[in-house]
Image 1: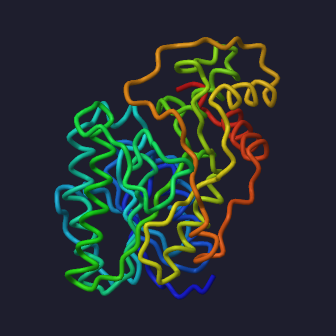
Image 2: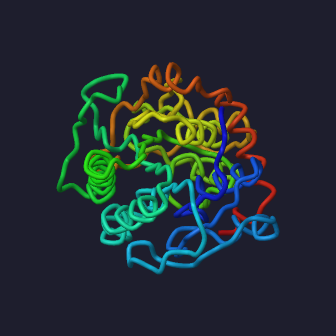
Length: 319
């Protein structure tokens, strides 16, 4: 991909995906200013980055309109937002605020610097989809007042704000719709499927599968997700563009693969499904292929091996 970014602002850069984005930008020679309030971000994700020339950290809440970090930016990536059900159900108003006020703040920074702006949106804007696989022109099937709506509608609003900025200001914006991403730097206790399965298997605890386990997910290894995000940032495409792996698996198949790869003797335990839990989730990535030349390269088994190894070698099992 063509690459000419000198200095980037990354909101939510201490989070799971955000920390990988910061690392990749630095590896490509882009200076990075990370803004995070550590509501769900993890300081340990930044330890190595803090020793890297060109990286700086600003501890601030973008929803509270903090002072703009000094210096020039030619790229703004807005990744700040609680992303796991456990977090956004615990922080409903904060989640809504970062989708609204946080997006406005980040877009205004990009506008003042005439910078490229990327919004990290989500497959959750499709809700419990009635069209399969999900393509970017599908408007979704979202319950606007259900418990998940604080996340779904925060991201839908952020997309609307970003689209309005492009129309009204002529801002150079794009929107990425990220599908289930996994890999190192996830928190063991964040409530998402893969860290839960991996830590349960390594501890010898039952793997808790919601509902029947026949609902599907399309899991994308974080290295592939980051490559897709930065390819979109480097393009002129306005989005939205799906960034995900079209290889569809049932939740039960993912649990069984984790058991196989860990060699765990853990049992599978079925628990009640969450309200509005999507039955099928799979991206159509035709647009990413044609416009960005991007497709994921990491097979689920390979990505899960890397993830299991990381969890086994860190202190995540103690949290």
